[in-house]
Length: 230
Image (cartoon, rainbow, N blue to C red; front, side, top):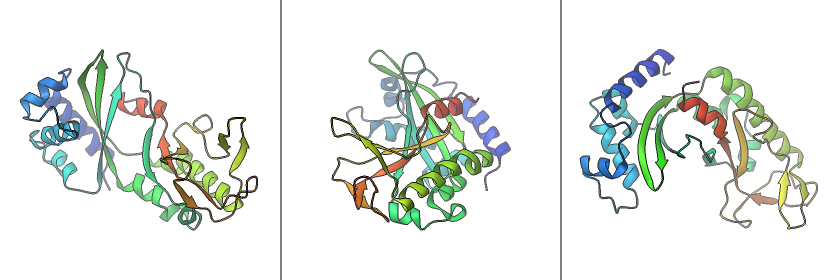
């Protein structure tokens, strides 16, 4: 298990390394690290090249280990984040059969060290802002995150899914929302309404036996607190 003091030291080392590139626009960084600016994956390539040329051996493990996850974050010119952070889609029937301590969500957040690469928009240009190494605190995982997971399991196991359907045919659910949980929420992660997974129990209101794919998301306000070191 990665210790907090190790992460703190790694963040200090990264800050020192990034000092020479902080607030550089990505076009300049593409040139410095020999990245094709027209490539579709140019930002990912840039991040990986920066990591490999950092001379920080612990950081280089990011590109080699499943225990690390790189997430790109884009802030607007005011330093605000527009989107929450998504995680992989879950299957309703699998989640219904899980117990918290051995659940997929618990394992992901307890085993994974996240590397947040933060960029900031200034007009049409994008600038490197910072890189933040983060691991979810245990009290958050076994507190608010567990609460959201437990509510999600209760919803699908009881068939209490759709709360109401508005005049435009939009479905509103009982799933955990960002207004009731300060850390995570559940929201759609499907291509369309037909992109579904089976339900363990039919929905009480609609009788649906399948429902559009959803996933857990870190609340954008919480992500901002993480990258700002709050």
